[in-house]
Length: 66
Length: 149
Image 1: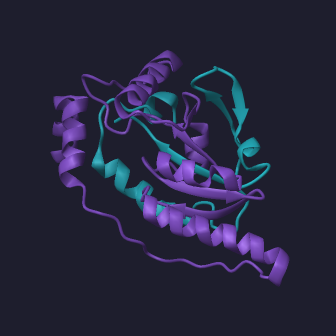
Image 2: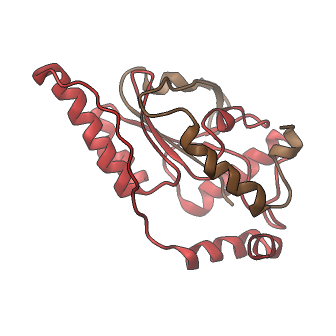
Image 3: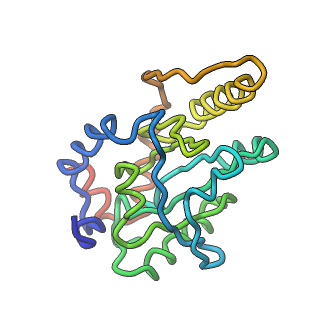
């Protein structure tokens, strides 16, 4: 998927439904949690996702304003 | 979710909001063509909602979003590098239930020798259709048209 495809300008339900269908096939509970670099909105610093659960549990909510 | 984060912060639980692509872009909040677009929309969200948790931005390609399978408002609980909970939508009561079970299980792993058990289940969430439509209207007329066509 290209960056332009990922950041679609028009929501298309027909493209969304297969994503929901595939969710159960993604990383399972009990599986290894992937880690990626993210940018802290407040500071601009790069944060490695795995640092969030280094010393305890982490709750990750994914979302957007829209 | 912010209140949940506050309730469990002293038990070593870190709670974050990972900002992805715009799920329903429209005239007022457009799709991201740059990280500046993403930062702008994320700041608007924080200002509008009063969100108190740390906000982390995924890259423009959605690398982390892809890695966790792309749903628009999913939630996960991770501990010891292992996925302990994943949900297709964010429903705070279900997340808290799973969180308490995870914390209890990890504590009792030490004291009672408990071992992890894989389960699957269907959970339930409120119907928020009216609130959702208001959100689309806030985004702009295109968001309403795109969703209901």
